[in-house]
Each structure stands twice: as C-alpha cells, then as structure tokens.
Amino acid sequence: MSKWSRDEFMLVMNLYSKLRYGQFNYRNIEVIKLAELIGKTPGAVAFKLVHLSRQDPKHKDRVKGLANPGKNAIEMYNEFSSNWNEMLYQSEVLLAKYQNKKVEEIALDQNEIQEIEKDILSGKEGKYIERVVKTRVNQSLFRKVVINNYSNSCAICSLDIQNLLVASHILKWSENEEHRLNPTNGLCLCNIHDRAFELGYIGINSEYSILISDGLKLAKDKQTFSSLFGRHENKSLILPDKFYPNIDFLQSHLKHNFKG
Image 1 (cartoon, rainbow, N blue to C red):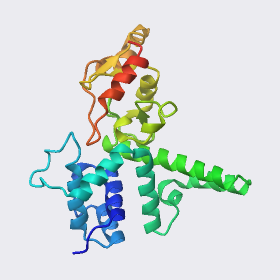
Image 2: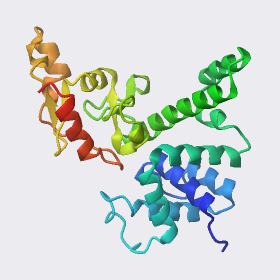
Image 3: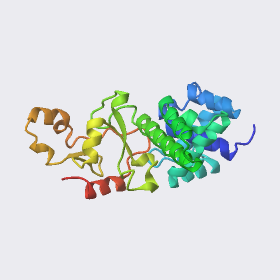
Image 4: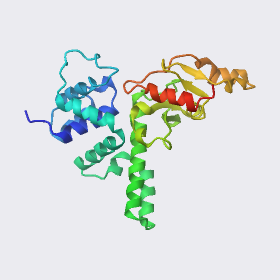
C-alpha cells in the first residue's frame, strides 16, 4: 500500500470539513470521487476521514477502536485548526489543481464566475482579480462548510430552505480576519435570525441556550414576536454535526453585541 502524501491528507481534510459524520463511508459519492482523484480506494479515504474525526475535541470518543489516528492525521487537523483562513483556501486550490481546473471553477457558481470575467474584460489588474477570486472562494467555502455542518437547516428554528439560510459569523467578518473561515465561528441561521443575531437581538450563552433581547419584547404584535422569537427563548441551539460554536466567540458576542 502506497504511503499517503501531505497533499492527499490535505484533500481528505478538505472533504472532512464539508461532510457530516454519517457520510464518512466508502459508498458516499464524494468519497468515491476523491478516492479516484488521488488513486486510493474509497474505503481508505473513508478510514482517513474517521481518523480525522478523532481529533475533534467534541467527538474524540465518538468512534471507538481508533485510538491511534496516526501522526499525519493529527498534524493535518491541527494545521487546519490553527489557520483555517489559509489552509481551507489552499486545500481548495489543491483540489482544483488535481482536477486540472481553476479554483473558481470548482468553488463558485456560474454567475459569480461571469462577474469575475467582466472584471477581467474591463481591464482590472491581476492582483485585484486574485484578491476578488480568493475572497469569493473563501465566502463560498465558509457557507458550504457551515450550512452542511448544521444539516442544511437553521440552528434556531430548523428552517431548511437553502436560499433562506445564511452562514452567519459569530465574530464579524469585517472585524476579525483571523477567524473568517473558522467553522467554529459559524452558525447556520435563516435570514431573519441571522439579522437579529447580527444586530444583537439574539444571543447564545456558553450552554448554547438562546437568549432574546428585551428590545424585541417591546414588539407590538405579540403573536408575531412569539412565533419568530419568543418560543425559542432559553431553548437549546440546534447543535451542528461537528465544529461546535466556539464558547469564547459566543461570550464575546454577548459582551459586545447582545442588547440584553
């Protein structure tokens, strides 16, 4: 059996970030695709995904019988965890390279690609285009990872209409560059709960309980308030499959943003 390279482990970690736990098996189409791409068996890729899952501090005891995940799995998980911003993007660039494509071709939809092509035709400089591509790819990756992590539904109300879901940042994208792509800085929320969280009308404490600002309770239409917000107060956030919300980030949001 051939030894696994760093690039191959990096691609498996890229896939790990996008899949839910129940999808770590050799029958999964994404596992099969990656296996074919790197010349491994689907079973071998699935096994490495499970190895990586043992590094998740919330789920390290979830899988029994794999006490020794191997040095490469540990190092790769730690490398991503300490630098999500660069590692997730670079792993997507690597995935595109293996497919003989540009990163925007595999990460962005057709409309986004056309907008970039318009910028190129208008004479925008190469460095500018590179920044635009990287920013848009990163935003697309973050959305994909976070929304899939929450099983494609709002973590507050369970709404599961894809076009109404937002990959919400706990620490704002504009104010915290270091954790922009960190999945533990993400919540999958519907549009209205995303906006309420962003404005500080919703908070989440260290026990993952949902807090509702007194400001919202002044709403004149009590039935609407109850339906959209009141019924969720003090209920538990619907927790993700992996990459649980970072407690320190939630506490920072409560301290600096929540209108308690």
